[in-house]
Image (cartoon, rainbow, N blue to C red; front, side, top):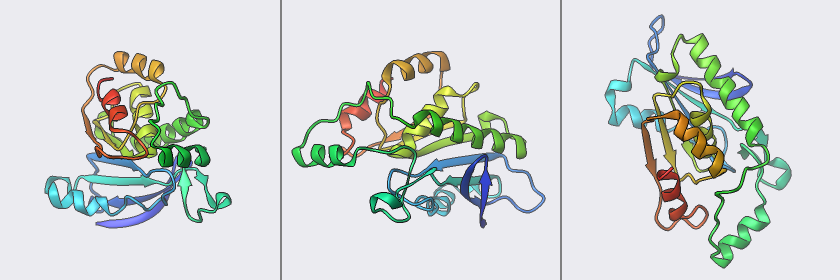
Length: 208
């Protein structure tokens, strides 16, 4: 198992490669970190996934892209984001216990993030000769949101979508895309007492 950095599309990534030299990858797993994390935040999942699913070894490349936006300027050195958040509004909602219904929210920066992650997927499928049905997309929190958006927007469905602590955004758009998408394999998990992204909102996403 080799770990290295490289740029895929326009995103800097950490790649954990279980495929032997001169062998061909059969599966790519792209996992996107959440708001405020570093680009290496989820890298430790690769060996853990290989431990619980040994069949992944020798055939899978894991890709961990760093989100495009630095948060150094807001006092979070090394942290990154797929799009910016209103941190004051977020903290106020947490402190007050306010329910955050984001179903009609289309974040500023979502379009650019979608383009960048889509370019990464196109690079992976082209360079490694994989169809989209051999690419798993997933992520945590904000990373799961951009993974969901791209999975719904792709011309052909990915192998699967993995949603850890996601939420439902831009409902009308996603619902239309989901109806056109057809069957899609999804793994979703969410904490019942999540103070930032309510469990009920995860259920709305599940029911999409």
